Image 1 (cartoon, rainbow, N blue to C red):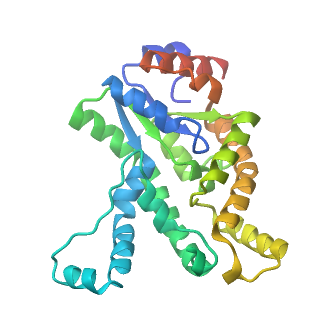
Image 2 (cartoon, rainbow, N blue to C red; image 1 turned 120 degrees about the vertical axis):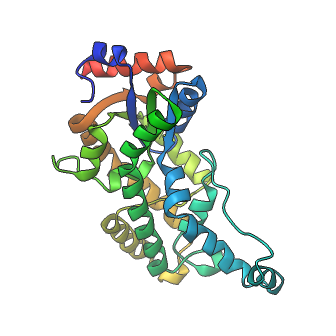
Length: 286
């Protein structure tokens, strides 16, 4: 606990928070509200991953596709055009596109070995971006003069930590500099996340053992070869498995390292004052 009690939180001159939850439960929305208030620095872990740690991978992948087109190849080889990604806090499509989906190449799928290689790149990048939090806390204060700090983590943070390990490097690093807060969704939220993902399936990041088990189980269930897998169907199925897989890890992270805020309560936040009151209530309940 970064703050001993609700009073300590409310009186703190420097409020620092790390939000974690499944994507779609309001982390970025609330972080944007706080940033717009003028006193909070918004550190987006996903943005850091896509710009600092995976920017070259993403740009090179786009260049690789452009090199297949003679007209674009000539322009690239003569340095006549520039190809880069335009990642923002609210648009992470370039990174999602790079991560891709495994399965039938005719349906836009990646060979599983290549998919796993990109997953490993993302894991390294997310681990480092999470460990950069302390640096950005200092940077936000020393360079820009922000008194408060909000870290907006990616949904896959739970894949790289062990909340039962008191020596976990990521959880130790984060909890030592900020209050960790889990935004806990209800069953209704889970159903909506599944519906939303089913309408527009996006690439995800998973720990290697979970992904390997899911891939084998899917192939057995469908009775198909790897090259026959429908990429969207696989990641839809895996996403549903991931919700069950991640929930107890999030819960343990909150129990051992932070506090819990119901997603319905976080949804009531309209400004920094509301946010501070919601966090105070959660700390008080702990």
